Image (tube, rainbow, N blue to C red; front, side, top):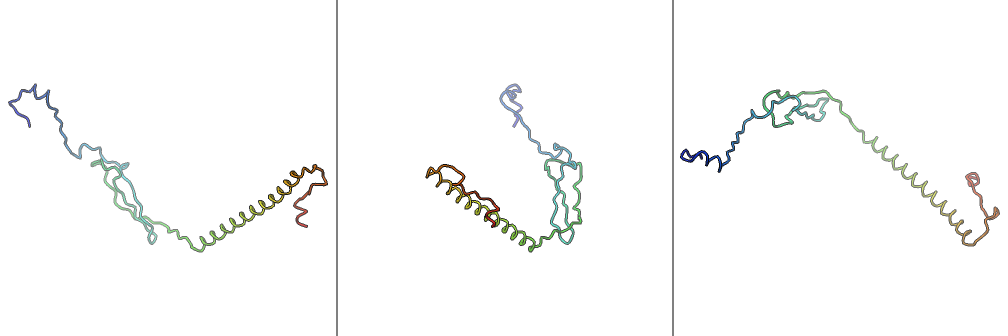
Length: 139
């Protein structure tokens, strides 16, 4: 507290004076940009759009808009469609895995035959090759 008997020069040199004054008038004026919206769920073709102050540090200015009721369309997901998509996806994965397993086995067999030729140091002549093609396997 200030004492009138204290010399003013002494007071200024030893004390710092700070004033905190809480008032809404120090805040900027609210505008439409300070508003946020929140939309509710679609119930019976209608949903609520509620406005709120996104910036809590404004005062006066724009007025908060009232809640609006909007028309909407409900999106219903059929569980049967989801089940069919899941079954088809699983079938595609099984087919892809089976194809990869078949190709792995076929190439493993071919590599095994190649390794035998290499180990035996058999000269590479046409008679020692087993030439295969897709047409030969189908017959």
